[in-house]
Amino acid sequence: MLNFNYYNPTRIRFGKDTIAEIDSLVPSDAKVMILFGGSSARKTGTLDEVKQSLGNRFIVEFDGIEPNPTYETLMKAVAQVHEQNIDFLLAVGGGSVIDGTKFVAAAAVFEGEPWDILMGAKVTQAMPFGSVLTLPATGSEMNNASVVTRKSLQAKLPFRNDLVYPQFSILDPTKTFTLPERQVANGVVDAFVHITEQYLTYPVNAAVQDRFAEGLLQILIELGPKVLVQPEDYDIRANLMWVATVALNGTIGVGVPHDWATHMIGHELTALYDIDHARTLAIVLPALLQCTKEAKREKLLQYADRVWHINTGTDDERIDAAIAKTKAFFEAMGIATHLSAYNLDASHVETVVKQLEQHGMVALGEHGNIDPAMSRKILTLAL
Ligand code: NZQ
Ligand code: ZN
Image (tube, rainbow, N blue to C red; front, side):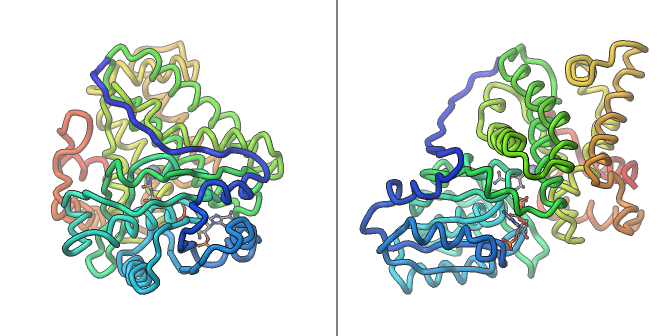
């Protein structure tokens, strides 16, 4: 196992009716900005519940944080934070709203041009914030990462900082009942790929992380298709919600190598062609596994055996079968695994590779050897 330094300060309040607990989690004299997305928080009544729990506190609403939150929109929130002397942020939504709130938390107190945060500038302070999660997928509710898009540059870039862990996150599985099927499927696939990015690398004898990861993958494989036919089943929703959180809150990621190439290539596909985050991952991952199967051989064999119970055939046959099963799982969730499903062809592959180069994404993967030529190969295989 590799050395690690594990820190996760986010308090989780999980279960039915936990929104009412916000009152005890936000300072009573706080001036609160509630940040949310397009219309779902208002329509579903979640926003009203949150406001009720905040009682008499001073509240400002900031709506319109779009999926794949943009710098352009978030900077408007930053301006309002300053104008209204806001001192506490509360995100109500999915990964986009929570990521956006993390950026606002850092940008509002950043000295200099906030876009530099996405260009690697050090964040040394951030406003306190909490979240009410309405879409299990990204793990943003319990991690220190945020991904922001700058529309004018067609750039979608991540930043990480320990100051942007939410102080608390409310996870009420009943709040996910209103999700459209497409977002439910996206969440399952996103969480699945978060796990593979931290698991399908090379062995370092990290038995705890491996067995956790394998268990979480199996839960997604079992419950993913079930939630599509039993969308109102509380226990399925609760388990999926917690899996998505644990998939990216550090538990399985400490002490092991990480890949993240699928995500970095996927981010370019979203920035250029507006494909949902999880859908880009379903396109890239199977092709990436195929192209990197020598380097990932041992873990792919372990994955085939322990996750998919594939025990017959040569090593190559078992690896190929595991990749095929992975693809079939994404397709069963209603998510395409080819670029052609989005009318993209070889000419678009070149555009994506150019963007990767422009954003310095030229040494990806756990060995840093996914260069532009390899990214081209992966994307071409994904056509
Ligand atoms: O905007 P509204 O009207 O609220 O609708 C949203 C949105 O259109 C809707 N929705 C959310 N909760 C709902 C609901 N509709 C009905 N009922 C509910 N309860 O769902 C749509 C998608 O929401 P979004 O927040 O964009 O989805 P997701 O949670 O998948 O977040 C995706 C973003 O997270 C980033 C992605 O890059 C992308 O920008 N990621 C963040 C990560 C992190 N912070 O660690 C890691 C991930 O890999 C990912 O990169
Ligand atoms: Zn993701």
